[in-house]
Structures are given as structure tokens and as C-alpha cells.
Length: 267
Image (cartoon, rainbow, N blue to C red; front, side, top):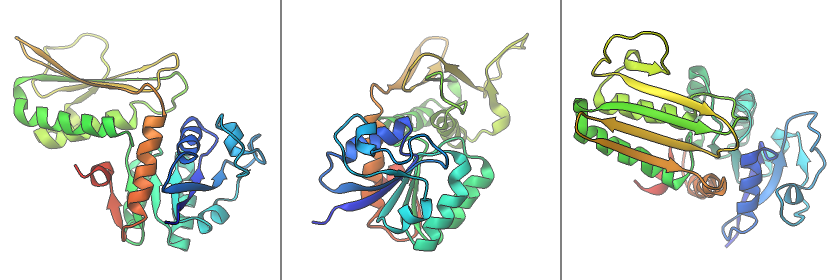
């Protein structure tokens, strides 16, 4: 069986290195091209060596369009500033797309929705199997506990992460708001100053950025008599990369449409 050829955008970043490493051992997909931003010091370097593995003779380039055209599936872990260019190229060449980039605004999410009318796209703030199980468990807990428990979300990442709260924390918030039929006005991002007693429907989100923590998310449900904590902690970025490759394998067989990791994992 022929392997799926992957174009990896944002290949020199932490997630790009992890995806490169996972693909080097995959039996179903292989790295075809790697793309970094224009002017990057890594242009011309061997992506296999850069990821800490053996040479793969796949050199970092800044030519998005060429990489996309020469692939079966595109995986994007670059910057939100690249999204329009990547979508334009994927649409031009009719290529399936896996988007793991976070920090996207509402207009960019609308761009993704529009593009999915023509090509298949997997869009998820977190590709890890365990994190998507976290999403499902939190949804189940909220359905059972309803308005009887206070809810707090804690998001911890390394000091280099640019967006806060994380895309995963935002997804947890959206799941809770939808499940509990609440709105953004019920959400508090951190706390300071003097408050009245906590509103029954309030959901708190707290962000920590320190050290080299890969990613940790907890959702707490508090009642006067008990505390329930549902937590996921990533020990290695390869857990996200494995999910991204699963998503690429899944989307390579799909028609146009917008999919998420629930679809990929069959939840």
C-alpha cells in the first residue's frame, strides 16, 4: 500500500519536530516536504536531523504552494498568520488539510468553515487522543452535575506559548457553555480585586505559563461536599503528533467537510 505523502507546515517548531519524528516510524504516511517561514535560519537544513533523528534528505523550504501541490495531505502547525495562505493553496490544489494551529480568531475560524465547503479539513485545538477523551469526560460530567457544582478550568503550559488561554482550554469552555446552556458572559478569566459571592453559573478559567510544561489541563467541579477533578497531562509532544498523523490518515479518505478529532477517533 502506498504511503500518504505529507506536507508539514511549521516544521521547525516544537510540534513540527514531533510530527517529523512520528512520521519517520509510520507505516501508513511519510513526510514529503517541510515548510518554515520566509527568512528562517533553518531554510536548507535537513528536517530529519533537525528533529533529532537520522537524515531524511527532506530540506526546509519557504515555498508553501509547492509543498502543498506535491502532497496528499497538509498538516499545519505554524502560525495563525499563515492561515489564509495555507487555505488558499489547499483550495487551489484541492488538498485535504489538518489544522492544529491555535490562537485563531473568529474570522479565521469562518475562513476554515468556508474552505471546508470545497475540501476536507480536520480542525482541532488539540490532537492528543487523551485530551479528546478529556473533552468527552467533561461533557459527560457537566450533563450529570448540571448547575449543582461550581466549575473551574486550569490551563498550564511552557513559558514560550503565545496564546492564553490555550485552544484546549477554550474548547473545554465551549463544551461546558453548550452543555450547560450558558453564555460567554458567565465566564471569568482569572480573578483579582473584591468580588461579590460567586454566581452559581460562573465558569472560571486560569492560565499559568512557566518552565517547560508541555501541557496540562484540569477541570474542577466543586460542591459543598465533594470535589471532582478531570485532568490530562502531556508527558511528550509525540502524543499530539500521533493524533495529527491519525487525522491525516482519516482525512485522506474523506470528501469535503469540516471534521474534528471526535470524528477521527470515532467518539
